[in-house]
Length: 474
Ligand SMILES: [Zn+2]
Image 1 (spheres, rainbow, N blue to C red):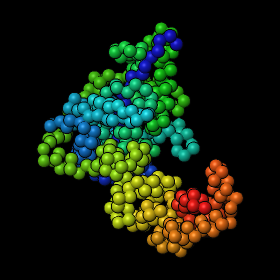
Image 2 (cartoon, rainbow, N blue to C red):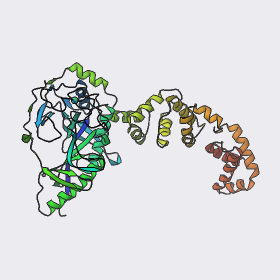
Image 3 (tube, rainbow, N blue to C red):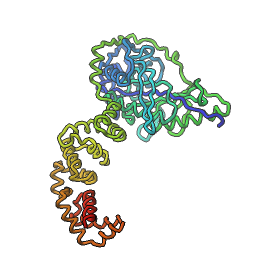
Image 4 (cartoon, rainbow, N blue to C red):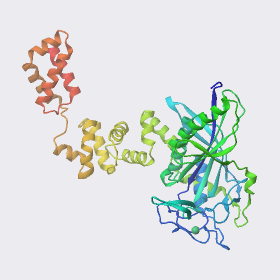
């Protein structure tokens, strides 16, 4: 390779809106895993005379996505017909938005390695309906014809189009991670990629490093996991740089990622190929400021704001804040437990508790507050809490009662500890003179002796302190 290239990537993400029903009919929006064609009606199968009725809830969720992503809502937006023929599209057009989408602009904050951040601007967000799905096999049996399942047809989607401001596969991954978090926190989409609720197309071109002008791009279709996006971009970067380095030209085309490589699918259509025109069956969407104000007030705290608050208000480390906010459910739980007596003012301990327990599954908030209190008071250690956790979850007992029943509580009473220390010192004169002679590690035997006397319940840090005090006096 002669010239060092950089990739220039723009991502188009389709997210399925979390509505009860489809975008233009009353069919349930829960077709994943349902029997084929069990979620269909004359509207979403394009029967003659059937007319679409816009789902208000879908519009509200789309607007919330725009607000959460700092996009600019258009005062008026319209639906357009995107015309093309394919067997999964019964009307032979898809209802989408074209030159008057509901949102222009917006931004996504990327969190990169070593605490670095970067903002990627959005070009636009628009609403559209999903198409059906072709089946070429049933179970393990390949068919000599294709079947079509229209359950997905008419499912409400938003398409979020980024500016070509992503310059590496890592940035693409970070972009998708942040975007998914924001859409999930805003309750707009579940973004479950395994159910096809979030899908991504990537436009990628190469240019010599340091040059402004874009190269010719290829579009990679239907990337259904973050890892696929990363792998496909890395593959495509090598493919295009090989062509460019040997003096070849990139063809503008649509390619498909098959898990190993990208393969040419068709030459890329231009927008005018689709003969877009305003859908005469649907009225424009008019915004009222009151409506937007109401929607804005309904958006829960978003992940970035929550991360910052966890650091400034609860004094968690940025790392702890990052881990806890990775899931909205976990961070909500954290906030709820903190309101209870016992956990109040012990945010740091609660954070560590939640993070220390592998495969964390929440226990009732009251139990968690009690467990936090026991750790904060040093009655038990974080490790003991971790070991006790499965039993707390199963027995549903107050952790305090369990700790008492099991006799786990650490002895912190200095009076009791001093007696044990005295006994240990009296039995080990050699260790005392070793420590005095400079062999500090000889104190280990004394700590061990106290732990034995206390049946493991003495607080090791306190014992250590008291032993050195005792030796000084001896
Ligand atoms: Zn329908």
